[in-house]
Image (cartoon, rainbow, N blue to C red; front, side, top):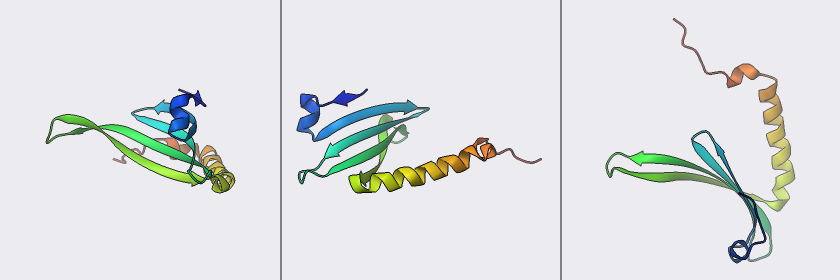
Length: 99
């Protein structure tokens, strides 16, 4: 779901939007422009949950906001973490209980 400069998005100050479903979560990547004309990225994690008390589903959301000036450093730091994970594939394996 990529959107570029559509009328609906520009009214919300969105320049670009992309959704990615990964497992039971959906991640939204939204590039926006503030009223001060400053660019920023929001990354939203959304997960469907069930409320036992009401019997209804709801979405639990978590967001991070990254200013344009912080994106290069964030990308570099995230790259270091991903490289470390790639070099230690055992970290991605589920833990097994020792008997």
